[in-house]
Length: 292
Image (cartoon, rainbow, N blue to C red; front, side, top):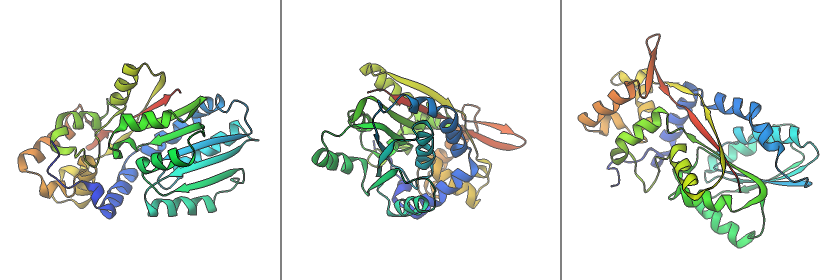
């Protein structure tokens, strides 16, 4: 059943505001950067097959901060290689920020950026018409499989584009995180599957295992301070609650009973821990490196 609420992604300014607050309140980007600097280089070392040009693709690249970190690691591992980098991102605002970031980042001469302002499904059609035979060395899909109609079909399509030694990197919230607990408990009430999917790496691993597709699995420890969610009328708390539930003005629009049960679960040890009087939510991420 579709959730009766309006999804947060329908109100882009509010979504952006809550997302920026989430990044400020969580260790999300820090744990990704730790993975990119400490673990990703060995993964990147195995791709490319000695070719002089690598084909790289970012699906749902946002403003490009994480993309450029990964491209820097690729350059360190393969310093003499040229890179064709396909950027797939539907938001004008995010693409503008990405291009601005590229213009002020040094040492990108060897990278050719192709900008694709489109959704993953639009890009799939576009690619099949324009480049049906082109193969990719490295594809990354970071925190984006929530925003496609069919995450498994999307994963399968992009995996089909890999060279025989290519890699597909997926980052989502972990099935063992507070998000996993929240979505398992309130999927019917909160997840509007016409717009977003409550999908975790646990769900994707189940799919990959059933298909016999090989992958490596990494857990990234991350947390988020959600203390203000428990103060009625607190503006920061209301924005964080919107982000957690993916519902516009959840605290105003949710029935009292549902609101109480959601807040009780968010405070429960399955989702959060109390540290020095603050409520710290388990924001752990999962990384899957999928083989061709």
